[in-house]
Amino acid sequence: MEPTIQFFSGFNANDFVFLAEAAWRTLLISAVSIALGTFFGVVFGWILYEGKLLATVLLAPILDVFRSVPLIIQLVLFYNFAPIIGLNMDPFASGVVVLSIYTAALVASVARGGIEAVGTPMRRAARSLGMTYWQDLRYVVLPIGGRAVFPSWVGVALGVMKDSALVSVLGYIELLKASQILITRTQEPFLILSFAGAFYFALSYPVSLYAEKLEKRWAQ
Image (tube, rainbow, N blue to C red):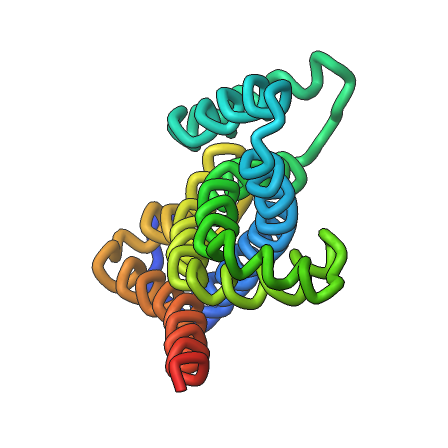
């Protein structure tokens, strides 16, 4: 009698470990992309605020494109176009590049709003005290404007963390991709997606909780 070939198997401990590793990959690509995107987003927001004609004419439309075009299209286009110009990048690197630019485009508007939140009289007062332009930005604009737009930045960061699931279209095995693989093998979508949802919650909730504590501390 020939042995029976089993195409499907139940969910086991190794599968849970597989999901945990995928959750770590999700956290890794999200953290790197958010950090890089925030840095460049603040720079872009400052350029937009200064209102230099050339920067505004060239930079603003480019950022609008990255904010408007669906992220999945950006990922696929970049991943397929990069080798043509000699950039042989793996799914992780491609995902980081696209997610960072996407994050920067979103943060640029947030950063610009933060700078605008600091009134002109306050900035003039800082300059009248002998502060240089860069000291004004560091000691006046950054603390006050940063607090004003911090909730918006947290919303962007959490959104990017969830949007990182789209990198799965490039073959990067993050949480969503791992869930799809396990669902195909175990045929237990409810259980797998429940675990995946729990992992996403575990990644996002501490950020929201910490942000809430900071806001309360700043409000005192």
